[in-house]
Length: 418
Image (tube, rainbow, N blue to C red; front, side, top):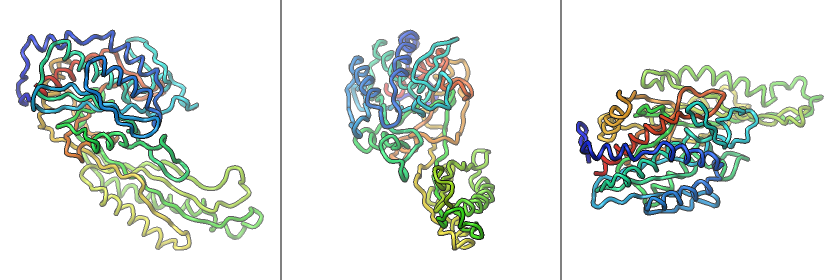
């Protein structure tokens, strides 16, 4: 493996790799994968496409049928010895389905559009574009005739998007939050280190927060509106008003407790359910409040749960008649990698070579499969394409960014696995 300070590649080998990266081929494949709808739970067509693409490169293929209509597909460029093994991991499921009526931008649809040097379309930055870049990085290594000691693994997984089953929301379309990568590593595919091409704008994300989803539930009295006067305090939604107030007072406490990387902690009030829209003449018999509590890697998930449960116990003691309930139904730890890890240094060196300046380092509130991989002892860094702020247009990536990061990926893989 290359040392942190100096590339193990000769100038001729490096030039051969860089000259083997084809912009036209990258653009063509990006358009093809965007045009394959693959919402969470329906990743099979995308997996089959990538299996064929991996086979064309002559990679060894592993197919993991996670469940009906969804699979992981793994392509392995086998080295000649016992060198370091690097995985490029990426999820095939998209953040949205493409059918959401309120998302009208061209970048929210599974139809590729090329405009002004950009590719627009659902999944292009989260994260089909990275999957294409991985594949073309390996293709560049093959065309340059590089002989590696270690393996380069392309792991395309299902079910990464932040969603989960709860209540009536059951089925494969809700089984995300690392489901595919959990299956990947627990069924025999575990590299020495991993690069995740999540949309970081080519910044090196060395740490990200974890996520804990919390539900506070309560009950009320179900009666006709005509019989509700004088019993307003038994209305579940009215009761939830007081619970929301307590949560709003608790959020600043969590912001301080979870302060990390120079920023306060964060809590999102993600959902509020109660009553029946089709029968507003009845008082609601229950209401539920759902929170996304972002947990820095400096706080354990058990400590985070204790903090939320403390709030629940305080509210239960204050309002014993509410029938308060408490549960956590997502627990995804944060992830971190040593800033001096050789993989980080190798990416930085090659980013400097390709872009002309070092990459920015960052910490973020979003989660990734680095959470899963790092818990299995695999150091993982997030470093991938995206182009600019998120807006109403939806997903988009500059073609130049895709080409540049493919070059960085190829050089990095060559150095690590040499």
